[in-house]
Figure (cartoon, rainbow, N blue to C red):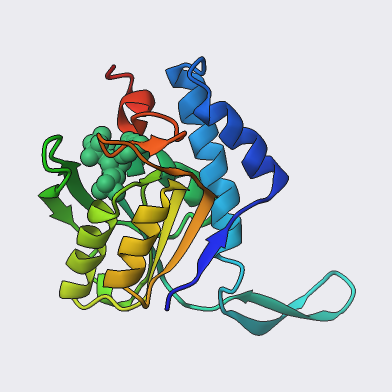
Length: 209
Ligand code: PRP
Ligand code: URA
């Protein structure tokens, strides 16, 4: 069974409070999502592999460690996942970025795929799928399946807010995928919105409502 990590660092929780606030306007919302993505990237890369090297300091030789040649990939689920990409790239500038375009049909709540563009060497990369919201889990499940169908094996999922229903759905369909979230909320309402949540992440990021 996959593990669920709650990134409960005080800075993350503080910023998440303002992300949720209905009075937070687009500019601040975008900046806060970006900052929380950076902080969560710090958590998600905690176990990244290191290798030993020696460097000459001005006075001696030091035994040091650097991130080993392992290659990372960030996979935002469009649109809202885009809001988390730059924040992660702040910490991991060499990562490549692939895009998976999905929208949730408002009637059925089923995800509809409309775009997939991935790095050519995506199978060799350790991937972080990012989306602020894990609601029914349909979008995350479809994105992870799309990656697995293309030969990807090392995949993690990173979301700001998850509903218990979404976590359960991903764990059921992809028990090998670890999930990183800043908060697990109470439930989904009849329209598939996370309660209390933050509303529509894409609309709030891009000012489309
Ligand atoms: C939102 C969100 C997730 C999805 C979560 O995207 O960003 O991708 O819903 O819901 P689920 O877990 O029930 O699938 P939306 O479909 O609204 O598209 P957008 O990002 O383009 O606004
Ligand atoms: N997508 C969102 O943007 N918000 C929700 O609460 C659920 C799905």
